[in-house]
Length: 396
Ligand code: AMP
Picture (cartoon, rainbow, N blue to C red):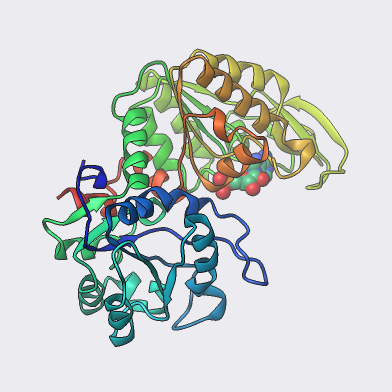
């Protein structure tokens, strides 16, 4: 892997594409700095080598041009605090002023450029724009896994301008090796746990995982479409009627491919989508009318946990229930506990996807799993077996 570890960046202008797409409150304070923290090892490497770290990123979804709430200047003070050194800011990401800001940099300095997506050319992968950002550096480093599945100017196309000087940063290298470890050379049994609201968006992941895993556990809202496909009564639970036939054929595919498909057998139901609703438990195929299933039941937890505890490789994407509400968080919590226990016993566990990462943090499991991926969409596309443009651009 073309990683920055073994090269010296001394005296070089190093253009680093990071993912500083962090949540900000109404006063522009960062409410979760995980993505900035994740990029620190690469930035520190450039500083330690005596290179000039030029940081590029996007933030939010600006429509067209500058918007105060999406300015990357809001990240500068926090980055300075984390690095314990003054970080400069350039109020543009191309043009004369930015070039001048870079000329003023000394070796070991750090400069954050303004939001790349203030130019629609960034997402369009415009050639002229790409050329302009490429002209700012001697070396290109991609450390943004969150956007690795996008063929944008700064995430993929720019790499063509650095045929001999393009590298993965530490974060992106770790992301790729963790995914490779899980998917390309898994120790068996290999169990994937897929949850979340809907089957839509995860069909390709499920289909692709059938070729790789020994066990596939399905939980969350999507389980009720499977229950309906088996002829069950699911009351008011979340259902995708147009996916019922697909669910049926996925159950058949699992059999053909020799994958053990573990669907919930019981369900925790509520008479309203509300933490204080009246709760009752039933078989997942027998949810009473007027009730909706919001979590997996205790029998499902035991069955799923047993499979997880026997596994040597575990991939988890998506919660088992509406974990944001305390009364429906038990399934997600217990499955998380089983993953931590399996990890303690030597399994390799990889967690990804915004909601599962939020759950892992909420329940205090973050340092008890092997790896937490920083990219939900990028991880899903990797699980689907797709090539990520940001990764291919460095490898080719
Ligand atoms: P996704 O973005 O598809 O991964 O879905 C995550 C969301 O699914 C979370 O906000 C959960 O609250 C929600 N979810 C999980 N289980 C259920 C369920 N049984 N019914 C409705 N929503 C659910």
